[in-house]
Image (cartoon, rainbow, N blue to C red; front, top):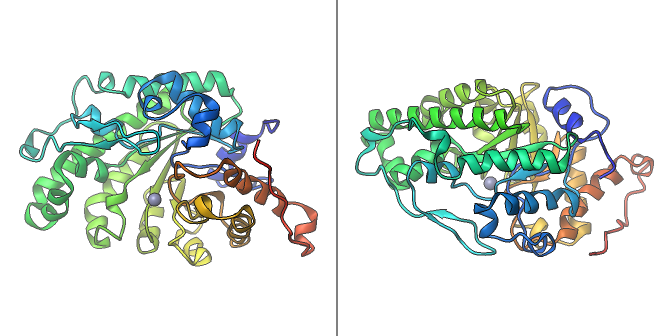
Length: 356
Ligand SMILES: [Zn+2]
């Protein structure tokens, strides 16, 4: 990439400073089958080998044009470090947690003394250093991780998590205190290793799964604490229609909130978060990004830009079978949006990248 401004632009927009153009990147997973073939780094190995993880993550920047490097490709690193068995998945399926180690002994959950040495935590710190070396100083590095609610639901079991909200609220509250602490500790490790931002993904805390009243009482304080830890940017991805909790989320201290296409009224969403945080998204990962033509992707992307998205991005993790040309179409859409012809109304027909 010739553009040496990528990291500054990313940090500036999250700090609320003026930028020349909206960045195009992904704060959610970026591993695709095409990029695996081209980079020589495939799942499942790329989840467990530092060099392979770095190579695949970097390829989404060098080969698909995204303006950040985002890693890892799964949401099992913290779960594994706390004792979850992990199913490694396969070339087109992400790893998943295979056990709930604290389901029967929630009172034993604590931040382990050797936390920084457990599981893949040292590996992710290594990947951060490798990527900084390979990508240089100008490319932002974004590390993904489970959020406090997702981590608790993995360690306790999803059924327990959801039913204990009513049946054992004190137990759940104590567990969330520990998982919140674990997430804050890990955030510190990642920013120390050189990550510019962490992005927590906390699917179970979204309004599709959790009543927003419970969110306020149980989850918000954990987010506030996490946002105060480490020195990098704090981002969050929420699946589904996050509109009912956007205002609360914007008060937690996150510099950016990644939203899905199910947030259909972007202008209203912008009003809810005000100047407190930036909105990232929200091109459908399972819809147009995966199955659409690049003209369709550009149409959606330019609609997002017109409605004021702050960082143009897929609405959720990129589906492994997404064609590289569809990712490139996002970047092209942004470039065309800033072309003088766009303002004069001469939109389309869009030119689309050939697959190379
Ligand atoms: Zn999502």
